[in-house]
Amino acid sequence: MIGYVTLGTNDLQRAAKFYDAICGELGVGRMFDMDTFIAWGKPGGGAGIGLTKPFDGNTATVGNGVMVALECKDAAQVDRIYSLAISMGAKCEGEAGPRPGLPGFYAGYFRDPDGNKLNAFIMG
Image 1 (tube, rainbow, N blue to C red):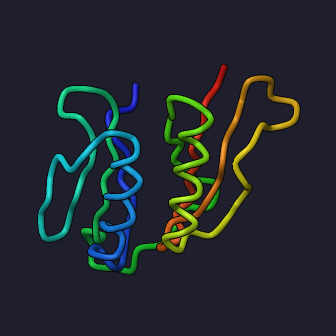
Image 2 (tube, rainbow, N blue to C red; image 1 turned 120 degrees about the vertical axis):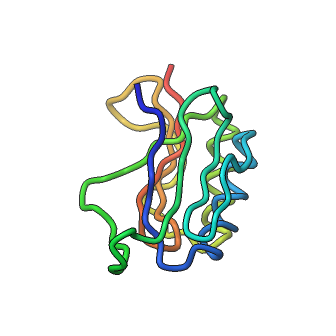
Image 3 (cartoon, rainbow, N blue to C red; image 1 turned 135 degrees about the vertical axis):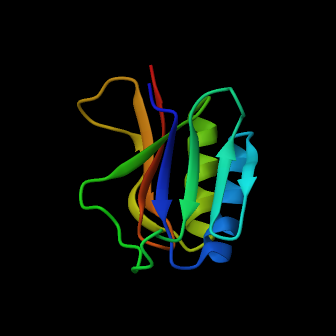
């Protein structure tokens, strides 16, 4: 299915600190670390997430309607990731908790320091 998702940033080092913490809670570290691109995940083991300064040299902007969903192992991990993100300057887009009308779906929504929308979730 999805191999990796890449998000744009205008401050790679600031964004890297944010994603080091979030990905650390998910149990993954950096796979690649270059001057303009950093990626987290398990080599050969599932989807990853990358951050980059746009190749075309223009300012990174967020996509309207674009969101990256981070699958967690349980509700407690959703809560930890949501709280961690908020403590690191993320903007709340929906507190962690069950979602009405979606049985078994528990999620917390936030925007990273560049404005990219993410959620931490479990289903089932």
